Length: 108
Image (cartoon, rainbow, N blue to C red; front, side, top):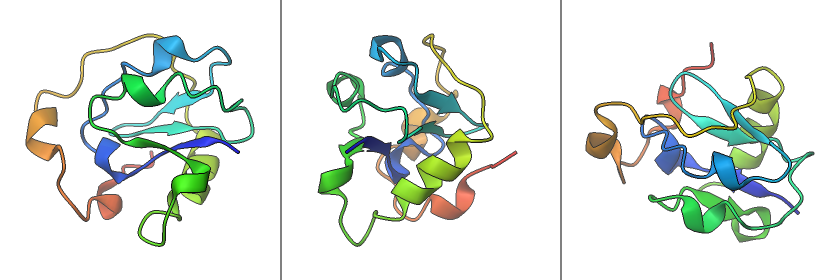
């Protein structure tokens, strides 16, 4: 089992979670973070650090967000690892909780 970053992180990209990860499995894209599910050790340290509750256990994914496991897997293979907290985008608060952001993921 792994933890997965879901839709609420898109365009918010808070990085509070990355510093607590003991195996450095977070990867950073232009407007989204992902977790490499092959490297995640299911320690759960990151989940409470996310201020917008975008990190969920793979076991807790439902039909509305189960595709984020594959999105995390795919994008973690191409994006660099992030291990230190960075400032969120200036408009992050404007994007918190907004639905239907999946198509806004910038992959490159």
